[in-house]
Image (cartoon, rainbow, N blue to C red):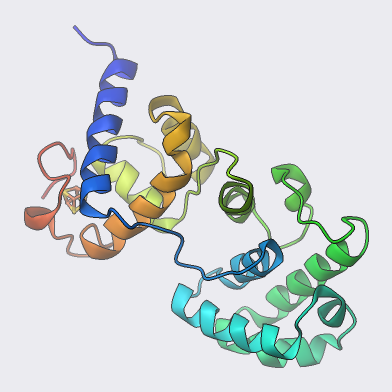
Length: 213
Ligand code: SF4
């Protein structure tokens, strides 16, 4: 009889296959043209939609095309630009702190190190993993609200704690799937496995999902 880890790996493989077929073009929904722009969009994304972040960040970068101009701007002016993303005070502190790191000790290069990135207030593990995965292709798991929900429903994890969910994912999904898995989970969460009234009958994971309704 297969042990728990073997079963978990089989479930993970089925999930990854099903989602890859359903969402062949799955990708990061935050737009960016350089690593620092992705990091700032990540900061702005807390409790905000990607659509709103993309609009507001485009406005910010049209007014402040480099990190020097953000780092030296009056915080109140930055706050007025990023206000549409909410949590204005904390996001303003984070955006300016990130810009100062970039123009100071990081020498203009976004670090490829999760712990270093997390030195910026407002960059937590989720955003740091997004940056190292997207920018540097270092295998990392982004556990956002969609990922947490779908992984629990399908049966990959029993936890609601993002750090534990991340560990449970890493145990059963191969390393070379981690980056894409985050995007696939978001697609699944948005299209079928919504927080309320999931569309289980149409879901590509319905034949093996533990939480199917
Ligand atoms: S079958 Fe239902 S609960 Fe399971 S992943 Fe799909 S939508 Fe979510």
